[in-house]
Image (cartoon, rainbow, N blue to C red; front, side, top):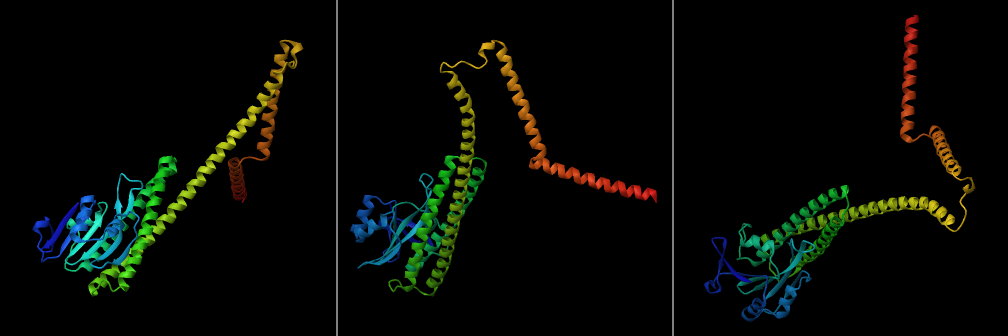
Length: 347
């Protein structure tokens, strides 16, 4: 879809193509580009099809390129799509400067361009195309920082839920956020190279105000890169920690199952042995054998209980040791107090 914008009294006004004032500078906004839009850009504005294909490539990196009749700038913008996986992505935005037109081309809709068309950004003018590009980059950094904060908040909320119980869905959400941070870091670094090229190139003439904007954009871009790297490192550390917790819990369960398996091996062995036509012990005593076996089992239980009791007295558990030490300290304090009272009374 292609829309046409011109400024009146400092505000953007949406016009039809036949209503455009050719003496004024025009912003041609092509978003969610269709095949008809591509043909329009090729036939009416003589844009090279290869450049259009590069701009519509979701993996295209930021760059500045000089064509014969126009100048092409590609920047990476952040987008949020609730239906996508991951939800936070980046997309290329092509900016073409030709004659009295500045043309923006994007394969999807993005919040940065919506902010311009809805008037959320003040002081934007079409009379200075380099300044317009700087404002787009500045708004992109603003959205990068905002999305990074949202990613951090969502990551913290998921970590709090995982501290109670770990589910596959929560792990997948963290993986999606980590993937978004990778996309953001890559795009921000590509934009940083583009900003450095803006400062060195002679393809675009920047005045003092444009250079000031460029300095501010570089500062915001550096901040966004550092935030993305920090959040990504924290998220990787959290994933490793939860991976260790999961492995530890698995080891505990396997230990319990192994103990249970060893215990069950004893009756299984006995049953298997006496199931092979082997006479049972004490079978010749008849009903008395049941009482004998029951007595042996009772004596075994009592002996085990007695041995464990002796072991507890000699090697008490940590909590019992603490109680014993506390009681002994209280007894010593009480004995000292009694001695001091007796001494006072004797005097």
